[in-house]
Image 1 (cartoon, one colour):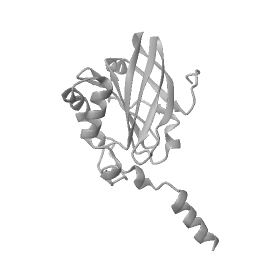
Image 2 (cartoon, helix red, strand yellow):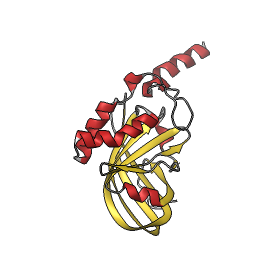
Image 3 (cartoon, one colour):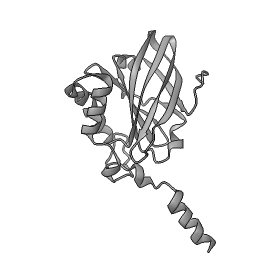
Image 4 (cartoon, helix red, strand yellow):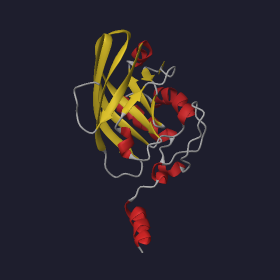
Length: 200
């Protein structure tokens, strides 16, 4: 009887991985995606429209920037839309905030991020950021440090894109006009539910 109650509770209150499913595919990381239901992910057309509206660029420019991301990673299960400020003089800092939207969840969640970097870049900037989210089957898994994936930074149609990965969750931040900085430094971003000023 106790086992039956446990199973019913899990089915009632649990959140199965299929809720955040995406197309089954093999990524550049050599690991096939374990999520296979495309209904619970965002199509390329949906993301192109969202990115175009968010950055105020043409759909063609958004599609150009997203083409490689979809080729590498497939369809995302969610996205974060927000803003950030960053500055560097060899050692850099980045702070941002936005709202997480996941397919299958009715409400957006506020997300903060911050992190250090080291490299050859200098200066400061403020930018809008649209982060594609992959393989996130539990929102709590977002709140950790995400190092950049070496060799993934690129710049297309005025939008810079790079990949971050931790515990099989992959993030693809898209920034307006500042993507080239990603190729000149290394670091990580820590995502959290609450604002924090210490970058480490």
